Length: 103
Image (cartoon, one colour):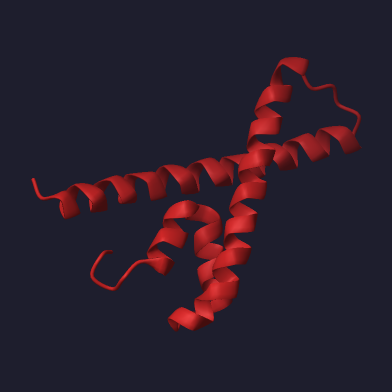
C-alpha cells in the first residue's frame, strides 16, 4: 500500500473518532453542569473522566483559535475552519499548514 493512502485512511478514522468523542465530551459536560445546578449527586468515580474531557475540550478550543487566526492566510474562512478544527483536532491544523499535495 502507498503511504499516502494509509495516511489518508488513518486521518479519516481519527477525524471520525475525534468528532464523536468531542461531541460526547460536550454532552458529558452539559450533563455535569445540569447536575450541579439541580443538586444531583454524581459518582465521584466519574471525576477523572470529567477532567480528561475538559482537557480535550480546552485543547481543541485552543487549536480552533489558532486555526481561525491562520485560516485567512491560507485563503480559508476563519469561522468555518475554526469549527472544523475544534471537532477534528490537530489533524485540522496539520491540513491547514500542509502543502497542497499532502492532503
